[in-house]
Each structure stands twice: as structure tokens, then as C-alpha cells.
Image (tube, rainbow, N blue to C red; front, top):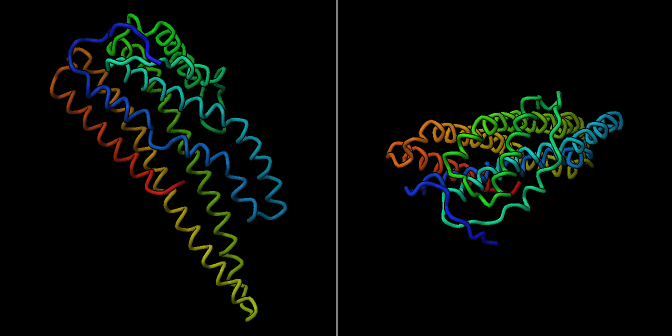
Length: 271
């Protein structure tokens, strides 16, 4: 849906700003990694002992309880970048429906690493987005959006990096659980009648090992992408007085290119 409003931004070309914001909105597959974190128990359950399964089910309940909060952080950063892209372009789309998807708030969680400063930044950025989008972007430019949003955005990206490290650690524990069972059981299966079973187990082990290697790479790429978004926005904030300058335009183009490469690398294989 188009909104018929005037462009509040400057008259200079903001193509590089728009391309950087569009590339940043993809955030390196963070959403897929969040989904994988939530689904940890379903994947590891067949490999668990009864005692380990009881603890894992309790942990699964905790993961699912915080999942919506974790995704709300991502959605807020994505919506900020989408809004920034619109302010840097000529078209106007109604993003108000996405405001309703952000959730009612964010809670600090010691186990995940989300702190009160992340909660405050989430509140600040969602309020900014609500004001900007509800007003139809009137009176808003790239400069004012970046100036008002940078501090909270940087804090939220820090929160996403913290969560990505949690996802990676959870995946590492899952890998140890799954592959560890094979490491223990296969050496003890030496009977002739177990040959077919052992062969199938080894094939499965190889497949899972390859899966986890790919995932290790994805967690690294996700963190690289978030750092690029943070650095690019900081660069933009530092150069608001000269957005037409060759240096800032070249820098933003490079950040956008790097983010697209990271996004493509993460989508080489389905997660």
C-alpha cells in the first residue's frame, strides 16, 4: 500500500543508504538460527537417555518461553532498516502492520545475556518506529532517523550478537549430544550381525557431522553480518553532514556488498 506523502529527506542521491539499509534488513539469516534454537529438543531427543531427556524437556520449555522475545529484537532492527530504506527512497509503503508484530515488550533474561540496557533500547527504538510510521514519515529524514535511532540500534545489535553466541553454544551442546552417542556406541558394536546397523550408523554420523560443520559456519557468518550492520550504521551516523560525499557513499556501498555476500553464503544450503 502506497502512502501519498512528500519525501522528507534531502535532495541528494541516497542510493547507497537505501542499498545498505536493504542489505542490513536481511541480517544474515538470524531468523533461521532463532528457529533452530527453538527446535533444539526435537532434534536431540532421539539421542538422549531417559535421565537426560527429563532435563532437556525442562530446558525446551524455557527456550520456547523466551523465543518470542528473541525474535522481537530481530524484528525491531529489521523494521528500523526497512524504515530507513523508505526514507532514503521515493516510494512510501505502509509498514504499520509490522509494528503490531513487534510484541508487547522485552524482558531481561540472565541466562540468555539480555540485560536491562537491551530492554531499554528495545523500548526506545519501538517508540521511535511507532512515531515515524504512524505519522506517515512526515517530518522525518534519513538524518533525523539515524541521529535519533543510532544509540538504541547499536545496543540492540549488541543484544543480537549475544543471542547469536547463545545459539552457537546451544548448537555445540547439541552436536556433542548427538555425535557423542555414536562415538560411544559404535566401538562396542562388533558382532557380525551388527554390521549393517553399524554401517548405517556411520553413514548417519557422517551426515550429521557435515550438517554441524555447515552450521558452525552459519553462526560465524551471522555474527559477521551483525557486526557489518553495526559498523555501517555507525559510519552513517558519523557522516550525516556529508551524505553526498564520495567517501561515505563508497563505504556504504562496500558494507552493502559485504552483507549481500554474507547473506548469499548463508543461503547456500537449507538450514
